[in-house]
Amino acid sequence: MKKFSLLFMVLVVVALVLAACGEGDNGKKAEDANSENKESDETTELEYEPEPIDPETDVCVVCGMAIADDEHATQIILKNRKPLKFDDIGDMFVWLDENSEDDIGAKFVRDFHTLEWILLENATFVYDEGISTPMGFGVISFKDSEGAEAYIEENGFGKLLSATDLYNHEWEMMMDHGHEGHDHGDHSHGDHDHGHGFHTEGFDMHFTELENATVGEETKLEVNITLDEAGLEGAKVRYEIWKEDNTDWVDASEANTGNYAADYTFKEAGTYIIQVHVEDDHDLHEHMEYEVIVKE
Image 1 (cartoon, rainbow, N blue to C red):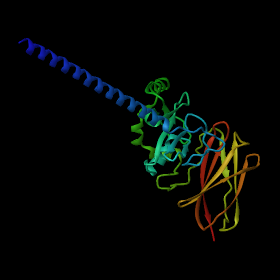
Image 2 (image 1 turned 90 degrees about the vertical axis):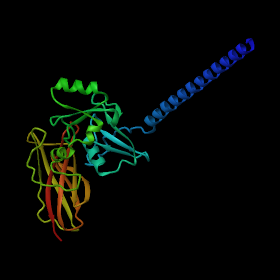
Image 3 (image 1 turned 180 degrees about the vertical axis):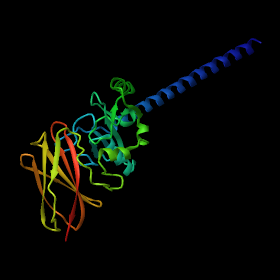
Image 4 (image 1 turned 180 degrees about the horizontal axis):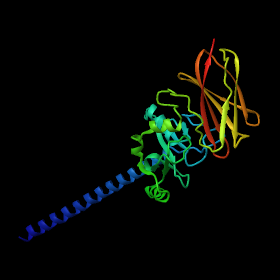
């Protein structure tokens, strides 16, 4: 009987020891797994870094406008490390709508208040048609929902959106509003008679009509720009020239106060659209389209 009791106690002790070892191994495995997951997450976050914005050289991939180093700038880092930069989150989604995301490493937006770069999927957004953004899309980003909610409460307007919501957002409607008919989705530019609905009070510009534009001959493009009825000095003016899917960009020089000119040679006959883009160092951002018929 004593031998049986002793044997039973030994078996119990061995079982307890084995169980303890098993728990220890499982605990270590779980700890190792958690550690690996944490390291994996950190690696993912650090694998792609946003690049600084240089207003002197960076232009939006979609609209070709200079990108201000401000809260509206966004960027995509491709898996090959190439950055794609945008002046407005709306233009980023125009690009996303036209391209596959297979080659994308990360998408970055900026916090509205701190300008901190944050991953698109981690941000919270506010939309309202009254919010001013470079291309008129009306969407701004925040690093957390608290900041976005505070903005809405403080201003009395705005709709809270998540990153997922942005993929279902009616960007097409905002493109018509922000780009004045310049539809990047199918490269159709719609109605070109937009009137003088400029955003900047006191701003106006008049493009010199081209009556005898001919293929192969150098043509002078000229626009007169005023602000409060005085010639606007020191502006950055670019001509966006397209026919069907072919687009050229031409930088204009200030010939006289408020007069900006450039030379361009049309390569084939047909109807072209010329959009004049105007910016300055004081957040002025205007554009207007003109139709030009080029003959043989």
